[in-house]
Image 1 (tube, protein in one colour):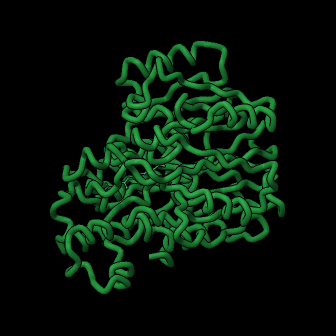
Image 2: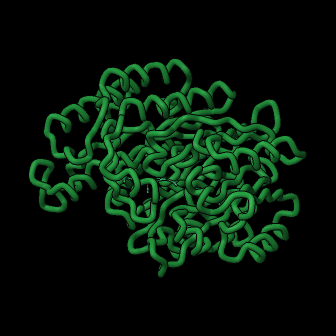
Length: 417
Ligand code: SUG
């Protein structure tokens, strides 16, 4: 069976706004109250997917959730016309676009039963994200319904926060070889919440049937969380045998690297030293929130936000890196500025699944024609702007619902509306 890496991007939803909901996410705080551009945001995301398709990479997509989330508001004893603004903002967030937080995925070569296992993230730490999982689970159950190849689990129960693949890295000699799965967790006590709990990571590893040799539990550095790395994928990314990370990403870097090298002697660790790029600069420019991909013609590329190119320190370090003899040979900047202003870079916008595309519901798989169709829907129906102070506007609610319905109809996924 041919396994391909498929990136499932979240289509940026019509309610995309800047409500400043994520404590510890510096971009979200900085841009709180600004006017967002949902249409431009969606088009940026679609063009990112198109660029990946043109590179010859397999591409999928997940769909925006119902917003405002009426079911969640009802469970809280209110509705969209009565909820006060802070609560309504939590019900309006388009945060499901960041599909790196949708689930944790253990590919088939790593698991005891030889199936690909997926667990949706409970996202319990942030109220606006805590109600994503039921719709995420509904989409996963349809996309990966083939029980011979996939196992889709329920989320880890609270109180153990799980933020999915944003705190997870897989290293393997090649995509389809058995790998080492690295679960990165945080320790609470700092100025910002540690969103990934070690008990959640361990539960996911157990449910996915990972033998102990295949699972590592690594603590994220408290300095990184305090500097604004609210997820590990803000300071590290892995692909095949390459780990690309900041020097200050992990609590105990030396013992992590020693353990990793003993489990995987051919691992290549590309570390950016603090003297070259400070943690602050790394978090501002999101150079690690990149898609590190294996190109069909060989070699690896970093698909990273244009903000990284705008930084002299970051870009000169990266240019030196790609001109050397290391595994990463190409830099591909992409414009996802609307998402970036909420702390979501190229890697946040995608969930990686290693699978045979033939085993996945084709309605979730993308090609250029489908991307054209989605672009046309977004261009015609997504609001042009949203003012975070006017999230209670009932006309806005009906416009958003109509836009979402048009997308689901276009992708023939009306059973999920
Ligand atoms: O959870 N931002 C998201 C960004 C998620 C990025 N994902 C990864 N790193 N994988 C978050 O903090 C901001 C919403 C607002 O403020 O309106 C927000 O939810």
